[in-house]
Length: 455
Ligand SMILES: [Zn+2]
Image 1 (cartoon, rainbow, N blue to C red):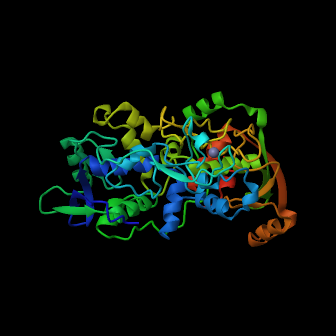
Image 2: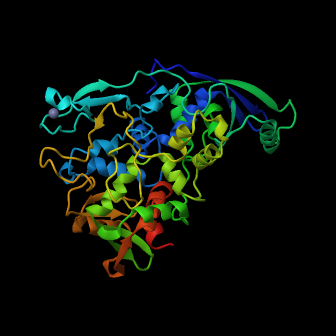
């Protein structure tokens, strides 16, 4: 991953010599911007990066959704739209390309057009080279729309901020630094040491991965301490609590005209979901989690007991003084991050708003969910999968085509006799959709059980 053209970032850290822990880091906008940009990364991008680096990923069951998109027969997809789930575009668009260091290997300044001249007016561009144009050709000729220029992205240039070991971005005030020193029990200069750090793309990537599993990622990465919690078994089922305002907003946007119902195959004695039988509407919902930015999920998850500290990064950034930001719009990109235009389908139970077209009036971006091959007027609001179809979804969110033999083998693996099984039909509305989103992020297994049986 480490792109040789990228410059390393130099930082100063204050370390507690006794406990060998980072007390805090002081940094200019270069590193703060990189840290803040984590919140704009779509979940599919984070999982893709972890897979490319064979890094253990402490993100619940969402990695199983990603693997399912890869494994499921392409014939189930309505269009060549799997790219948008496996390699989603950042909703903050080409802006993140100005970061001093960008760990996302997707070039957000690159678009594609068709080779057929008459199709160029008005200018129509696609995110992926697998999307067909209305003329029948693939839109596969690369067009770079922005020149990259390294400069401040989210916070103002001259500002120096404090980053605590648990990734809180804090104002550079004496009260803040002294409170961190007190907390660390480092009260005199004998116990404190100043350390110069040179951070490259590998450290930034490791920091992101570590932030999902550790409360002390700076110490773990820069003092090379193996995170204690890295290989701990997860919390399992947990109480899920959702941002009620987001539920309210989504309810106002969502029409229950196309209600989603799912059949749960439940073990009566264990009170767990063995698996679910669901239509394409439910699987569309689950797959759509992959194109959502990390910040969207952290905003939705209220007081969820996460193993790591990435939620603290989100909260501290949300509370950061408005005057420190480059602009209100840039703050919105992080605090209320949205998926790229065209990435969502209509009437989504999470009430998702898409980001505005980053190309403005320059070009129309072709919706990857539209399929010009078959029917010019085909409704692109239908989601990723062809319907009607039936799928099996395990409690840890592995999705596959429905198969009674596979169903029996799941029961067998769980030691659940068929006599212990009960079928429950449940409704998936706005609240359940948010519950599933947060469970897919926070629970290593038992996502369906957490949402439908343990509330
Ligand atoms: Zn064309």
